[in-house]
Length: 454
Image 1 (cartoon, helix red, strand yellow):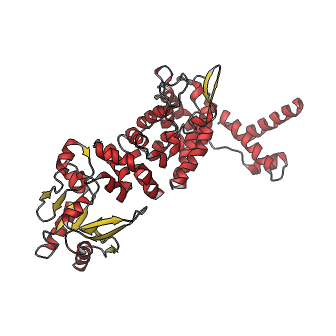
Image 2 (cartoon, rainbow, N blue to C red; image 1 turned 180 degrees about the horizontal axis):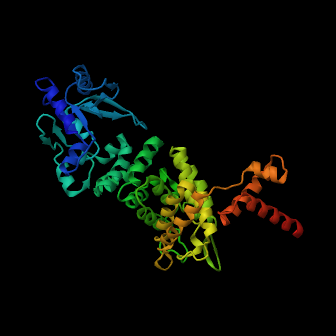
Image 3 (spheres, rainbow, N blue to C red; image 1 turned 90 degrees about the vertical axis):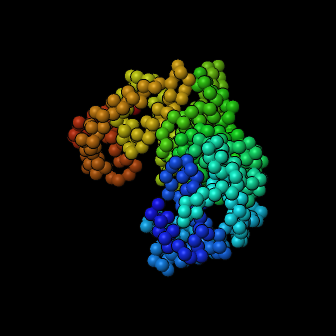
């Protein structure tokens, strides 16, 4: 990115853009923090300055043809493979219930105070690298690890409710805390998140979930009231007491699983939603508390939730599959003594490419139970057994086809062919070295025994 800065600086030397062109936002924040950043936003303190500079660089042959957004006074270009946004200094006003601002020319100071947080309000002269802290709090808040609105929080969040999610996202990404008045502003304006598109909410939620502290992010979303307007089912988990296998309520357990699983969005979504239907499936009898088939109900509910948040079909299908199967090993204990090799091979075959993610989810879930019932060795024990069983499956394919069944049993196409093929597959899982003749013979033998019993 330094190469891009040098190109722009050299191009504008001794032009009207010199000393009126600044790098703003995350790049400057990260520079203060000693981090590298590829997020380069340029603000130009001239009328329509962002668009003019983008056009200037294109004409001089330094960038791609600009993509211009006249309503916002912005332009995007590509320089040495990097997408760069140019904006004029501006002030904005938002119509009620609108995310689209009316943009007019403003001073550099007005531009700073229309930005979201002090840590993002620093600007750096592109010519000499001089950093200005116009709010007087940006550098101090970075050093103190504080997220603070640049001006009155109500105004900041009313103008753009997405900033509430950004505040939480920055807090968990950077390990910062949200300043009290800014937090209170989020609480007061939480309902306004309904005015934001589900796609933009989804994108911020993803960033929160794959951050180093996803559990803290979800907890803040619940505490501020925002979660009520994103995934209300999460709020219902709070205070739902569980059985002897747990030492936390459902929300507390969910947050622990979320924090215990690595930062893959499929896994984090699966962890967040794996017990989502426990409140609806909870029953109590003389033996205690039960959540019968909550994984099945949870898989269906997760599909609705993720569809509402505009996740891709591929992501939804993967998450739903993991949730549906996350209880699959629960009754076999830490040693998996009664989990046969046939069951291992069936699991391998049924889960396919989702086997490793499922094992990650189950392990994170296991170690988030109470100490007596946490089963920390269950998945490590299973992985030891996977090697030989995977090898058997990979070395041999099911030697029976639907056509083989039709010819052997003199049957025409129909549902029965599928049923018999499933039976052939079950026999093969038990005897992966058997050939076609042996499997068909076993099917015929079992059918004869069934007919005698009948």
